[in-house]
Amino acid sequence: MPSTSSTSDQSVGDHATLLLDTNNVSLSFGGVKAITDISFNIYKGEIRALIGPNGAGKTSMLNVINGFYHPQEGTITYKGKVRRRMKPYQAASSGIARTFQNVALFKGMSTLDNVMSGRSLKMHKGLFWQMLHIGPARAEEIIHRKKVEEIIDFLEIAHIRKQAVGKLPYGLQKRVELGRAMAMEPELLLLDEPMAGMNLEEKEDMSRFIIDLNKEFGTTIALIEHDMGVVMDLADRVVVLDYGKKIADGTPAAVQADQAVIDAYLGVAP
Amino acid sequence: MEFLNSIFVAPFIDMGAAPDFLLQVIWEGFVSGVLYALIALGFVLIYKASGVFNFAQGIMVVFSALALVSIHKAGAPAWLAVILTLAIMALLAVAIERVVLRKLVNQHDAILLMATIGLTLVIKGVGEIVFGGEPQSMITEELGIPTGSTDWEVFDGIVIFQHIDIAAAAIALIMVAGLGVFFSVTRIGRALRAVADDHQAALSVGISLNQIWAIVWFASGVVALVTGIMWGARSDVSFALEIIALKALAVLILGGFTSIPGAIVGGLIVGIGEKMFEVYWGPLFGGGVEAWFAYVLALIFLLFRPQGLFGERIIERV
Image (cartoon, rainbow over all chains, first blue to last red; front, side, top):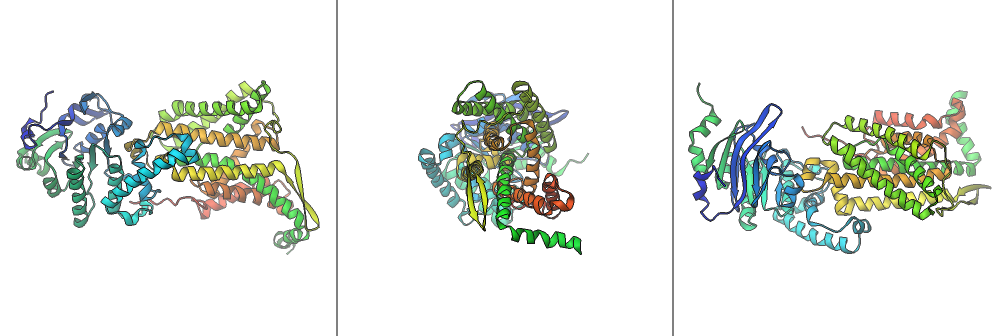
């Protein structure tokens, strides 16, 4: 399969295996082109950043990957399976989890229930047993509850586990959202601006969680982020979008020095 | 003076003079309150899980009751008729999800409401064609619902409790308790609440909206059937029952659209309130106050506490 992102492959090593590969994906809403002919790939185990000015199509790209949007052209290869379009359910059940730009939590529910909801796909006992709430359904609930408590400890949010998330400060909400995604035990985790609106301390915490997730659990991460310092620290490789097109792809250092990227961010003199 | 007297003094003197009659009035109000609460419960279930205000809940009550009676008339024993009716309600739920809701995902609330009004007309039309427009009597005895009554001697008088009313109250209680547990501790219950809160987020964790909606509509179909049986046992089963569903609207405004306890308490307030108002204050207005009491109460609530007694206050971060 031809890959256009060959410039940076050596940074991850030759034996890196492809987890996700998007091929010439184009997406438009009526006459508005959100994404034009974008190809990029994600290796197993890496942290991949998507950057670009506002409206560059970064979130649209994540939405394509997890099946919220269906591209008009191009294919998505995930774990070796070529697909024209993903359904959200397919994406979730094949190991893609995500967080959202403007925190999409279940506001009326507690932290614990929010994280628990991430286990939905892992729990299989039928409606009948659940109605009775005894026997197998109950045992299953306990097993998953244990797993969820581990995640809550990992993210250091044990003190708010019974609180309704709608009333929590923004930084904690972002953490709970990450917890919900982690509860799915994803292979590929999509983070849409995980540090937006955070102060320095919160950003450092979040960076630490992301690195731990990547190193300890081996979760592959694709993240959108505006804070260049964070991107340079975390990411193995960076893809840069502008006006729905890919303008650069490579290691943080290479991308930073790229003239097209500098122009996109600073503007070009006419 | 005399006017004020007839509002603030005389009714209470009447109550004190005949406490047994007062108790009877409260009991009657309580029972119709339970039935309002059951209808409101059907609304709350769907609203909680999908944010759809289901105008068709009232007609679903009539439809399920008529289906039950007609299937029994066609020769099926009562237990089989119940099972078949449940199957029909399940089919209806799946059909509604497929044909109506799935096409309208992410549409504005008003559009979904309009869709359920259309649904009301369709169910009504189909019901009239299949079951006929005649009022039917409920198969109370065949279902094993007790019919007698118990007299309670108290305050030198008697209060009469119809057994069917006691049964209705007990069944309502069990259903509410069951739903409460189901919503709070099970995976599907959690998924229901998740879908109610945020469609996108629910999709991202792999919850299937279609499945959840079908389950919710079926659950409210079951609630509708129970309501239909209970209400039908007290009066006849006819399309006129649909009007009662409108009173459930007032109940919802009182209790809050998202609260199961709210539906119950709201139902009881409306039920008891309107009976007492009718008996003790009704003559002041020339009677017939039962018909509008609930709506006036709802209006007052809308002015002072629009989220209802138990509703979630809508807080939006800007």
